[in-house]
Image 1 (cartoon, rainbow, N blue to C red):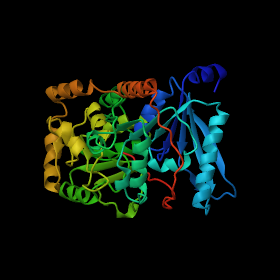
Image 2 (tube, rainbow, N blue to C red; image 1 turned 45 degrees about the vertical axis):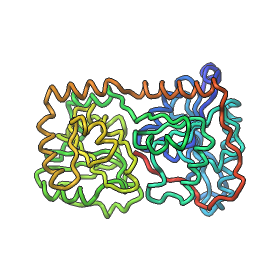
Image 3 (tube, rainbow, N blue to C red; image 1 turned 30 degrees about the vertical axis):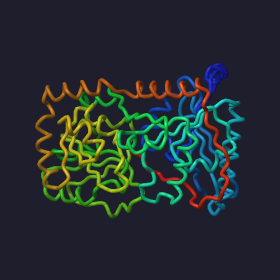
Length: 401
């Protein structure tokens, strides 16, 4: 980072983010918000460790964009839990010294990070609760206890959707509902794509698509049954398979898994879909989700069929902007119904009016103003070391929206 840029960013408190998600994984809420934060303050994005075939602990430091430093602890396989946490805490303090940071806020995505931040003295403690991590597959047993601990010390809590807000607002005195937003101009490019990606171009129409992490939230039985009912429809899924056995995913001639694609590539794929889908299961992992994909699909001009996920039903289903379907028969019928209104100008106008009220810029500006209000009040939280031994789970869960 050049000296002048560093001096400008250091004129105010840095933002130290503790994340269970990788910066170079699916581009979503953390990347959108912290890229904007990095425009006027230094951001340290500190990830959970990667375990490697190395002898001693190391750290990988990169700069994905101006103003933002990514830190990945590299720890040897077989390291004890206590030593792993000690090394992460040491790396965290060393990066603050390396960057010359003396004033900073702590921004948590995972309560598990409380194990390594006990000696830090932040000005403001922020919990951006984007998911109910305790409901995800493989969640550590202690996660609920740690979340309560984080709620006790946080100055402000943001939630990634209305359902999470309702679940947290009585557990903290300063909770703000900040649903994930969109970059409308980015996704609207789908309406002007001239050339499809080669791997999708070879798939026959009519296409129904999904992008996102493919994990326990996907209703594999629903997908298999809808594909069986509709051999005339091609089902395209884009995204990495995480935490579930890839061999357990439904296989059929009309189901196509294209793997992970970059955020910049998504509009080109969306352009080739007749309908976009959200075939989520109803389980602990989906109870509080607020999929960013819903407004992104709509911004791309794609009609949507979703299962009855609460934060999708409200507002999109209740406003009649998408179809809600939970059985294979309902989902099949909804695909035909939604495909008919892709070129409906009245529907497009309603979508445009709704999406004009939201953007990642406005979401970040609001969140930033709340943080600065907390700072102005001088009511900052200080994370103190634990006074008792907690359980021995090693890391948080990789559970993106």
